[in-house]
Image 1 (tube, protein in one colour):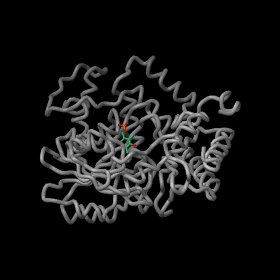
Image 2 (cartoon, rainbow, N blue to C red):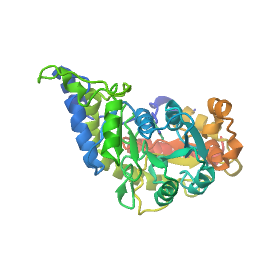
Image 3 (cartoon, protein in one colour):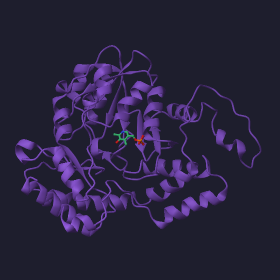
Image 4 (cartoon, helix red, strand yellow):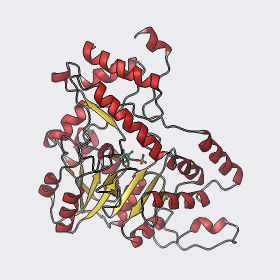
Length: 390
Ligand SMILES: *Cc1c(COP(=O)(O)O)cnc(C)c1O
């Protein structure tokens, strides 16, 4: 390791930008005496709905919770199959399993890393009930094709928008094209509430059911029972979950939402900078396939093909770590994980594109918070590691 590297602080992958306004907002909630689900959550649900150009949204504890509740609201039960992508975070697939459904994996498109609609078609059976897609890295899936398949076979469509808070498809906000849109406010995402998520839905009845399911199945606005309007009895109408967001988290999310568009512009400039700087290196850079759809620019994923680059992907990750640059892997293909292999008998070779991408992909730091000095340092070190193959 060079001296310069040993002296500098580690660049944490996906570290969020937190300002004085977030700190102040949290302090206010802490001093208010109402820390749980309450007025700040209600305010954020309104603000987020407005941002997504829909009537209403429901806040939940995580995108994982959002996906699970969407599955329940779709009526997924044991024996039902849900087709999803083979290159995603475990939570996407786990949500199907939590609801009792059977996940069925489709391979991805080599360029967008999004679910391949042609492969979806080959997987449909009479047990298929839904398609759960992921807008990978924030780039919209081929929604015309996916919605056409869904219509033909009477399937529900759930959009995992964990990467895609700002994105659009033909001008429509991502999450509004299918039956449900699920969002994440986890720390590394484009905006954060530390932990948190939100659901939007095409049908108001579906969304109302999700709101009830997210808080023990208690009749709506149960959080008001301890407010200043006097104690209110609630009715438990079904067996729900403990998936509520808190006012502490919503206070952070309210501040972050105001900055989302500004941060996107910063990442767009960084995307162009990385793309230009790496153009002559023997690596692949991500492709924004259709500029007509707003890409959420959540990840900047390069691909290290050892045959072409002359270095193994995992060695590249280590070299970045030695140089104090935090990286990510989004993701190893789902069938590479032992649980899924042993439970469902999936074989990585049956998902050749996802498997290859998963073995080559590296996510570089891509936060709006990166300083000019850090960006130059990253550009220099990626080049040095690739060209020296060490
Ligand atoms: C982060 C992520 C999730 C889970 O989000 P949480 O809010 O952490 O539950 C789900 N799907 C994808 C694609 C993700 O990247």
